[in-house]
Image (cartoon, helix red, strand yellow):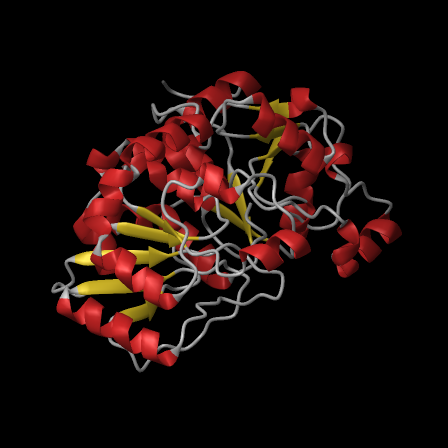
Length: 359
């Protein structure tokens, strides 16, 4: 489940693996009608979030896989026989806010129905792709769960990145309406902001200069925000586009030549491609004060830190030299934050949980 609104991330790829390689009864719970339709077209089982059937399934499920936590499922009390696995969606760089008072509606439901909504109350296991004790301790303290519940078995969503030969780049480009003349794609993927905004704070002059560079080099600047953010308008620019909210970033990685991010763990995922990565932490000092971070960003950055539009444009112009300069550091970051590179995380998770599947 992914808050019922999106078909993506670790839960999607584990769901599809189970459907393709097992005889288990597997269901996806969705709020969005388009998602329900999409999953039905795949001939997979999907159940409306706001339905008695969803409640019944969750009450008798042997395993429940979540992406975010309590907001992924209706307010119910699980059976003590049910195992809850929080797959999460990335290694945290920024501090995770687990203050459940922010979820006012759900907190009222939880109080009324006497539900357990603290992670340590209902989560049996939390997944991570990392290898180091430092990252495991961060997850343990962030979610207030014992460290033995943190499983470093990998992320199912990263399995597809290790099986690049099975992916049709042409199909992905068609799916996202990438024009044939585009020779290079630059993906801007900032982290989720608490004010639900997708920001690209550069001046109009810099935007025009970027647009000119993109047109000269047959490049597309594709912006991918978090599902819960509001889109911004770039209709006046031909080579700067907003990716659909429903787009699967795992698919977008395959057609991306340069990734630009800030405090997002997409930098660790994309490091598996060994392609250039630029960081645009334009509000670094304020972000550290307001949100807080677990790392010194420069220490874990697989590319240069850029702070304005002019620096981004210059970095794109000089991407070949940047690529070579950060080649070794990208490999170090990749190996630190991705324990497994074999594309078999789904299998490891199912074996650990003793869920049968075809090998």
